[in-house]
Image 1: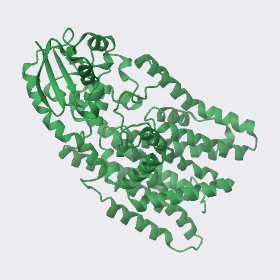
Image 2 (image 1 turned 30 degrees about the vertical axis):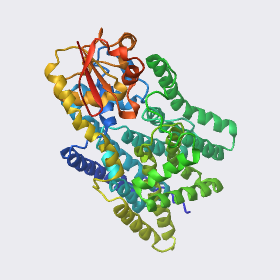
Image 3 (image 1 turned 180 degrees about the vertical axis):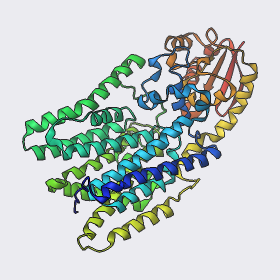
Length: 509
């Protein structure tokens, strides 16, 4: 591996800023994809896309509005950003602001990936390959036009790595720039996959600083200055979790256990490998893993290559789904999306390293690899493929969504402003659907309402609500369905009036 020196500030390559051009292309590609998927009705197809909108909306639109509505199952940054935009009905019902935010994250992620490739290898071809593998992948492109949280995770982690890489180049100053500190702090508030990524990046940074400083005391001081930012993020979130749900970290109770991978570590790891190549293709995954292995080998042996270990931290995102599957969490193929983004980056780095060797007379292998990578992604994961794994997973709720219209048609004409008891943990996506019929989050009694929800579970719904929605099928049924099964008298004073899509509607007698 040849590590090329980053172009100087005054060079032609720097003046052209190819990473900015690639980011602009990504922005246009994202907008075009949004128009296509919006026309097809797929932007809010995934139930979690709608649920994220509900969590942001309920901070203000709620029976008990306030900061506690942020909750603690998901990390807060994606919802905090959307608190005010989701109060605008058209943005809430369409998810338009969330989609535009994800498109902006796509541009930021492409910019950061290209900058990492350029600063590490100096290859514009490698930077272009990384960008192309992201934009040609139908799974990544689709996800970046939805109000999901993965786009913010990918963009934040890549930008953090860029800033960390630049800090390591000038680490003799010792001071941590506020931009780097805030980037690490906010990254830790995007998704839980960011936690192992940032921890791995800090470990690499400690290794590099130790090699540069030659003094373990100096190295420890510099790493402490850096690590206190993400540590503060974790501490603040733990305090938020304790204040909102009464637990330091809520890790159970919001999904039905799946025995497929539970307690089977090797099988869980294989699931990560399988999901990654399903989303990206065998060749892309194999080339990326080979490049990552080469990076680790060279980075550990050569002091001047140690900084190149930083991007390897992105693969630490696989630790979270592996742990989740091992703990019994149902398999979700989108959990491998951050690993797919890491594969795209490392394929660009591989092209860049071959390009660096070519400048020293090693032939045109970089062009061959670039062509193979682009051809592979077009063949194995064709762009605009409506049967891509992530689109298929997002469409799993489509049949139920259509069937739930029967419940809506039963509820909406008879609704007179009475409160509706429903579990947001299971039916947040349906609450967002009901916004099209004029329902607000404040019309519901849900887990975020604290004592109101607790009293309704203890005494039954009739004294508190005129209606009740119960998810009876998905993941074994929600908390209300389980309550009814354990105590049939729970529904005393209410009658089931209709059902559809696994949801039953009860009305107070």
